[in-house]
Length: 186
Image (tube, rainbow, N blue to C red; front, side):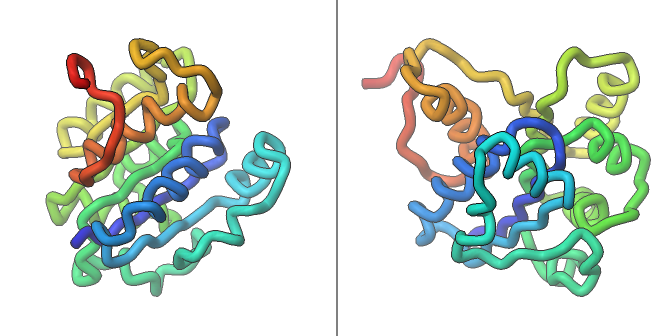
């Protein structure tokens, strides 16, 4: 059973977080715990982009970025997957440099040190050399960089369908069994 942390930063792309939560709730039999931590900026961006504050309505455990008593702030909590979506370049940089100044960067540090899965859904574009080097550092440390870059061979017809091409890939990377479009599949 998976124990998953979903961190939501203030980068644009709240729809990625929303669809991840909603899809995870449809496959509850595959995970034991789903914890969500959001930055204050993430809440503001969610409200701006999605026009609501529905993030408070999901039946998951929410934590503030200052709550270092959260179970995933320690390796003994045995959370095996952390997804940061969307992942701002500031958050990525703090993780890459080992700065554990909030619960998100601390949890990412824990996941990396325990050799568990860290998936960063970076959304900013274009990348500068600092971004690229931070992505390299995180990759070398065992993290997975999964840019929020939709694919189109499934012919998505809505924004949600285009975004799902990324979120479904993230859930695949997390080791979850999902139904999704597969290249060459039926």
